Amino acid sequence: MRKLLIALATLGGLLCVAACREENRKAMNEPAKPVAVGGEANADGNARKWWKEAVVYQIYPRSFKDSNGDGIGDLKGITSKLDYLKSLGIDIIWLNPVFSSPNDDNGYDISDYQGIMKEFGTMQDFDELLKGMHDRNLKLVMDLVVNHSSDEHEWFKQSRSSRDNPYRDYYHWWPAEKGKPAARRSFFDVNGDAWKLDEKTNSYYLHYFSQKQPDLNWENPKLREEIYAMMRFWFDKGVDGFRMDVIPFISKDTTFPEMPAKYNGDWGRFYGNGPHVHQYLQEMNKEALSKYDVMTVAEGAGVTTEDALDYVDADRHELNMLYHFEGVSLGYLPDSLKILDPKGYSLVEFKNIYSKWDGVFANKGWGTIYLGNHDQPRMVTRWGNDAPQWRELSSKMLTTFLFTMRAVPYYYAGDELGMNNIKFDRIEDYRDIESLNWYQQTKNKGGDLQQFLAAQKITGRDNGRTPFQWDATTNAGFTTGTPWLKVNPNYMTVNVAAEDNDANSCLNYFRRVVKLRKDNPVLIYGKYTLLDKDNPNVYAYTRELDGRKILVLLNFKDKPVSANTGIDLTEAKLLLGNYLTASPNGQLQPYEAAIYEL
Ligand code: ISL
Ligand code: CA
Image (cartoon, rainbow, N blue to C red; front, side, top):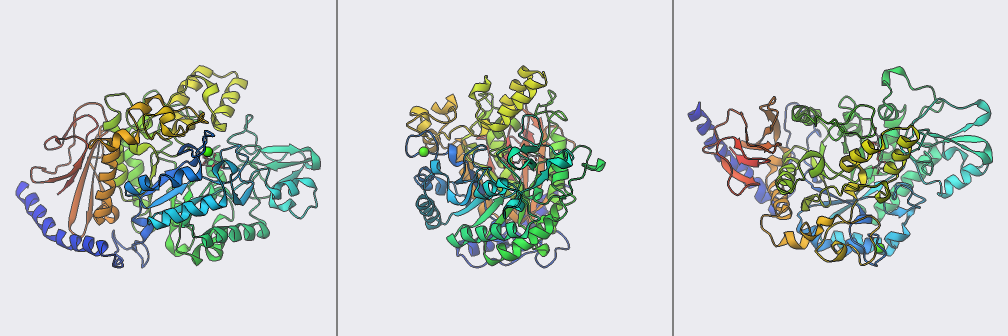
């Protein structure tokens, strides 16, 4: 058996020549040859595309870098850090919303889709940022928030002014004389009620999120045309794509029936299954997306493995990618406000979820992967271990996971430093509308506020929004003023300046793993196979392409464990690991990550 494995490894080495040729081609910037991997791919199913090979890095502008001392990150701040961003080896930057907004939900409530938020700067600042990125061969993806607008948007001001205003049908209204419509759940309302009575016209309007975020009426063709024109405006400026906020929620049955029993009370799933969502996305593709070489990614709220391909199968001409919630939702107590199961999460379930999602895109569409974003706590706290002795190791281990799966990594700024949750003790320290409203909701219901606050230390969104840590000066070099959200006190050691100079830092590990992925098509396009699937401690898998085979071993626990993959590693070549010396033959040290060439 062992001899056979060695023989296969040698064969793999010979075949590697082909892969290396592929790398040379890339270095010389020749166009890529489309490859079909994994069974019966259709003509376009697994064709190579720039965005499939890309690494996406997400910036929360409010928290990245403040240029004028008002305590709020801004566009000029990002522009001043473009060389840092380039040094990471990433390709695409996704900016959370920077459009004009009264900031009820930090920019997810847009009052002018073609204006820039005052705190963030001007359109000129935006143009400079875009140019600075393009000069460095970085692409810019904006955040399209079109399920709802701000109640301060001109459309809504008009819409609410009278029942026969031309903009009335830009939103969903229900005349109060018909009684209250069937219940709809608001994610951010203190009472959870998505219908708000507006006295001026004695009608209810719909808001899936806060009262200041009324839902736009996509069933109205005029509204849709305005949105596509707005998208073209940004594409004409040179923007490279859109991340689409809760896009599955846009279509509604405007008779507003009761939620059907088949949804089992799952509002996200119900909202994500509107009657015309695919018709509208195809129209959007035709009217805007197809005219440009851009990328799109849906925030796949309410989307399951069964309907994911309906959004991203290239033959359907809708979107390119979506990101699902199944992975990051693991481990919450059912029907709770993000309260974690004290037993922790099961790694076996975690592996099943990510493997199942890999399978969805094996022949069509393309996957994404993330463990952190602006709606999530810091990945090392939630999925690794942020105790001082494990923070760096487990952070590097999770980073290894994200960059070795067959999916575009969506990596959240600050995770490359191993930033962890700030864990506020008091509700007064929170700024996030979700945490504040849920606190009030718990209080109104006579719920356990201490339990809620304890859970928020791990799961609250503000943990992922604390200012980016640049150096050891006041406020981590983020601002010379008072930061809008407190800075994590560990900034004295966890910061770019310190980590830049340390070859073993999270930051430099991140750079190595990004480069490894970019240099090895097998890590991008290679077939994924889960190994040792019932092992409760280790996540092990192989990636294979054109005769090359890579093995990834990840210990998710704070103790030594062993991987039982049946693969003899004596001849294997270690490509990268988070320990200076990798453990022999599948024995793994706490939170060890190792990538082998077989
Ligand atoms: O629908 C959900 C669960 O089924 C929610 O988790 C929902 O998908 C999520 O809150 C949507 O997030 C996005 O839209 C929000 C905004 O606050 C978030 O920051 C954004 O990422 C409203 O625009
Ligand atoms: Ca500022």
